[in-house]
Length: 59
Image (tube, rainbow, N blue to C red; front, side):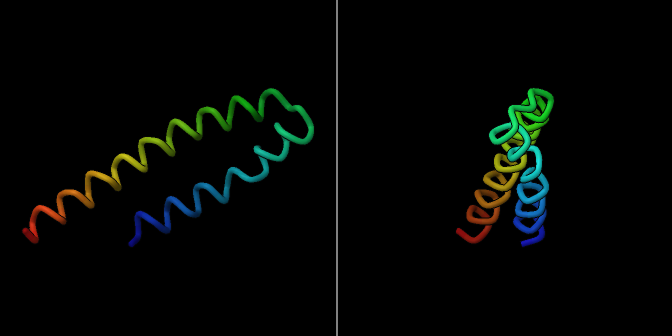
């Protein structure tokens, strides 16, 4: 469950940059958001792998 909380906190931390990019047109914020989305993708993949491993252990 710790990974989920980490993921949730990470997404929440991006709110300001999303706002800066979409509402104010700040291109640097867009770059930060794109980089963060790549990290988010990796975090999600790590969680998927962990879930699959736990499922396979129980089977």
